[in-house]
Image (cartoon, rainbow, N blue to C red; front, side, top):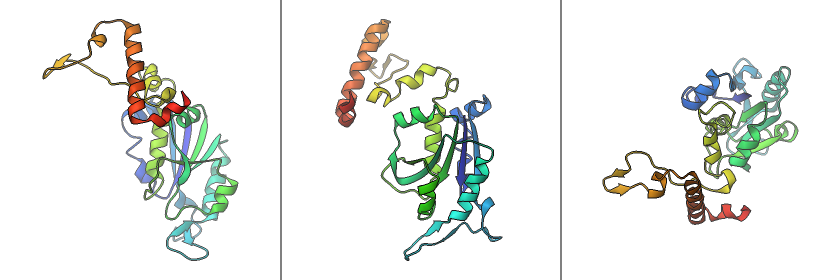
Length: 226
């Protein structure tokens, strides 16, 4: 998979993709992440990519010209399955969205900044708008990193145990069950006996029950689809 990201501050994306699972995915050649500085397509020698809002109001807006030039330059070499805009008023990102995007081959992500991008870009180029929650960040870079991480870990071969992703929270609209590791007795706190008995079916049934009860208690809204 190839993911291209257009950003006003691409250096913010260096660290999230340089460690752990994302680093492993890149080293295996399973995930290719390309960051692009929007100022490379600035409209003048001063690096301008934004301007004041029509109608007045606080905050600058990313202009059409540099962003269109960036998108179209990348489209010459890549056929994108999705052009995604990270914005607080987009569709809330969830596991199902991550699953769907992980099946794509080429994705372009545009990071919002300032007061956002000119609406005409959203009308004519963007195919999907994504929010990671009901709050506002200084820019879309951190949100883009969240989306890329959620997608990247689902790619076949990225995780050492590919079944791990299938038991994560929100797969099947359930939260993950409690997990334990050694020692079985720590300060008198005991691991549930059923996990120590070695019966896979009983363990699977217990985990489902725990997932259901945890979801019922913490996120009952998820159970409407079950």
